Length: 502
Image (cartoon, rainbow, N blue to C red; front, side, top):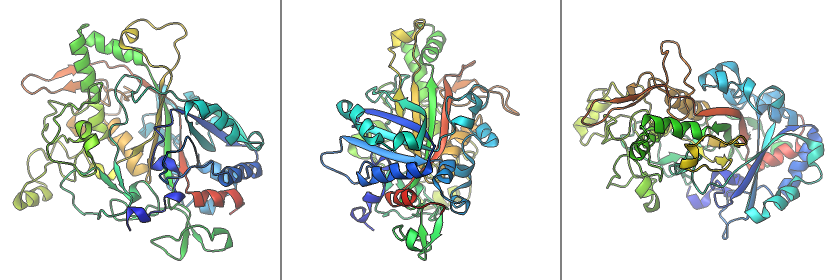
C-alpha cells in the first residue's frame, strides 16, 4: 500500500498533525451524565464535521476537534464488557491502578489521591480536545458544545493551554524529535536492526496494522452484522470487524513544572556563574535552550529525518559512548537513546556476527537498554501557564504566581510497551545505561526505591576529568492529573454514537 492509498479520512487528525498551527487549545475532561444525550452530542459533532480528520487540507483548518474515551467512559456509553475486554489490560485498568501508579512514579506528591482530576469521583469518561486560531477559539468551543452538552456531560475540568512559541516552561525548545510514521507501510519489519532509524511502523501508532515486531496489537474484533457493517475488516482476521483499526491509545498527564525551583537550584550549583548555569542545565536536559544537541550532527543522513530537521535531530549517541558530551542520565538521552538493536553499529559482516552473538565493547553498559524502535511515542502535548524569563525565575515568586507546566499527551498503540516502558524503564529508572542513584533530572520524583535509597543525583562523566556529581536534586515536576484514553477512528465514533449495549 502506498501512502496515497491510506484512508486518512478515518483517522482523527491529532495523530497526523498535532495542530501546532492552531495556537489556542483546551481540553474538556468530562463524565457522562446521560448516555443517550452523550451519543446524541457525538452524532451531532460527526454530522457537522466538527471532528476533524487526518486528511491534509490546503489551507489547513482554522479549527479542530478530537475526542477520546476511557474504558469506564466506553462502558457508560453503552459498550458491553465483552467488547471492552478486547482492549489492552492497561487501558482497562487505568493509570491510577495501585501497582501501575507505583511503576509510573506516581507516589507521595505525585500520588493520584492528590490529583486535581483523574482519580475516584474525578475519573474522566472522555476528553474533548478543542483547537482553533485565537480569534476563532471562543466561538468555536461554544458552537461545538451545542444544546446536548449540559444534558450529556458533567465537566470535571476545562484545562487551558498556553502558546509559548515552541518553548516549554523551563525555557527549552520543545517538540523537536518525533518519529516518522510509515503511513504507506513500505518499511519491512526486521528481526535485527543494526542502524538507528527515525521511521516507525504504522502499527506502533495505529491499531489494526503490523507493528515493529510484524505483529498486530490486541484490540476488539467484533462479529460482522448490521450494527458493525461500517467498521473495517480486521487485516489479520478478515471475517471479523475491527473496532480498533485506525484508532490509538492517548495518554494524558498534567505535569506541573516548578520553573523557579529548577533555575534557582541550577544557579546555586553553578555558583551564580551564567555560563556554568547554562552548561549544567543543558547537561540535564541533553540540549541547549535553543534545541541544539550536545553531540555533533552526523554527516550521514538518518532515515526519517529530513533536511529541515537535520540541524537539530540528525545525530545519535554512538560517538559519545562514555556520556562525556551528553550525560547518560540527561532527559533527552533517557527519552530517546537513539540506539538500534545493539549498542554498536558494526561496519562489516564479521563484526555484525560478533555483535549479534552478544560480544563486543560496551555490551555490559547497554544491557539494560532495549532498542528504541519498540518504544517510540508520538507527543502531542501543550504547555499551560505564563512563561517566566530567567531573571524572573531567579527572583522570589510573587504571592499570586500562577501554576505552569505541560499537558503531556502522547499517542501509542501499546501503552505498556511504549509509554509505560519509557516512563518506568528509562525515565524513572535508577539503573538506566549503568547509572546508579539517579532518575530523570527533570521528571524524577526523588523517592527512595528498594535497593536504591538515593535517587536524587546527576552525574556528568566528562571526557578528560573526573566525573562531576550533583546531589540533592529536588523534585521539579509534580503530576496533577492523568488518564488513559482510546482515540477512536471516525468509523468507531459513528459506531459508538448509535449502538447501545453492544
